[in-house]
Length: 264
Image 1 (cartoon, rainbow, N blue to C red):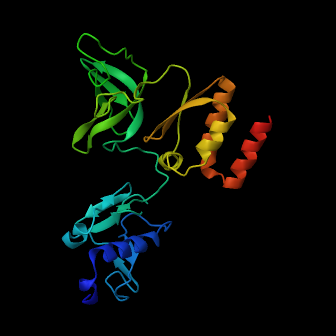
Image 2 (image 1 turned 45 degrees about the horizontal axis):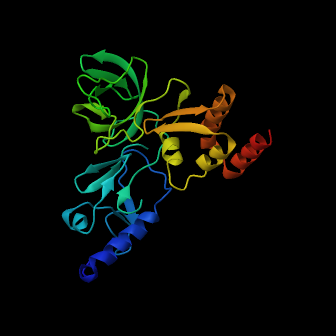
Image 3 (image 1 turned 120 degrees about the vertical axis):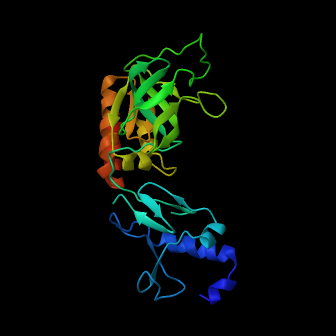
């Protein structure tokens, strides 16, 4: 490790980023420690040619490391819990149970009114709370028209294991920005969390192909819920079936289905 002491921080950060890319798509199991290929010492503590990814003070000083879904920090180590690049590490898995995360945009169902608070089912272990003042333009006199059974699109401002999750339907500027009560029409269905992350990826081609079929409105929730609405009920059902099935399709299979629908 004596040679590494004289290497600039930028070079070390670049080496770590390149090493992280080499473990993408690697299968891991719960309880395993995240290991990176060792470019400094082939006989490191992680075994021949591998070493643990350390989150000690020296590593943190060279850049910010964010632990995403499926990873847990244990001291200066990263442990797999469910099953990168740019300093962000996560484990992709076919998880269906949603755990609220601060900042996530989700689709919830209003289940009850309790004074000035709405209880919203978001698919987690407990319902989230939503204040009637957490809507754009809402005041004590001008209350939002929210009823039990309505669909709500909002984001979490409080989400941790020790407190009840709290939602709002406004951004930091007090604007709705697309959040609030979703229309009565349309279809709500549930998919895996992995499919949601896939559909929301910047380079996802599925949404571009779906948008060419029919005019539609669509809302994605990070809790695995999708709301979609087309001109007719038949088109809405077709779009929902395509989105559910595309998780297990290859690119060629998707092209064949989209071409058939375009012809019909």
